[in-house]
Image 1 (tube, helix red, strand yellow):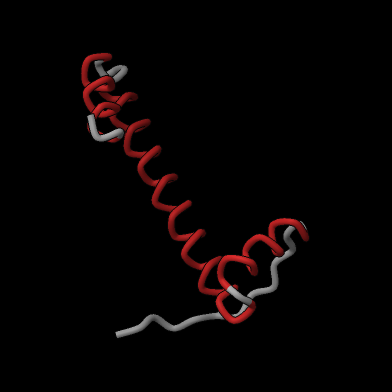
Image 2 (cartoon, rainbow, N blue to C red):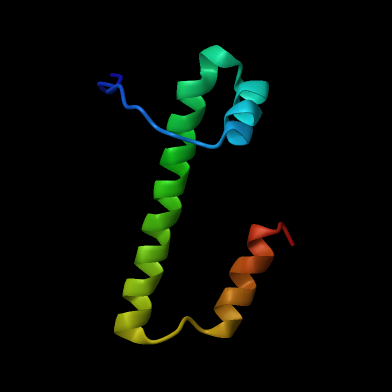
Length: 75
């Protein structure tokens, strides 16, 4: 089932709009922006999870951060 969409007006820099259109085509502009916003929201949520954890437990251990970094980079 697809979600209901809403039409919004946004203002972005011309150079960004041109780069999006080059990659997504004029007809894919909204889908590109929707996916970018969804990705950005996921990153913000992940940051909030880490901040909540650190507030309750202190900083993440350095060895864990190094391990995650290696896995992220495919090492």
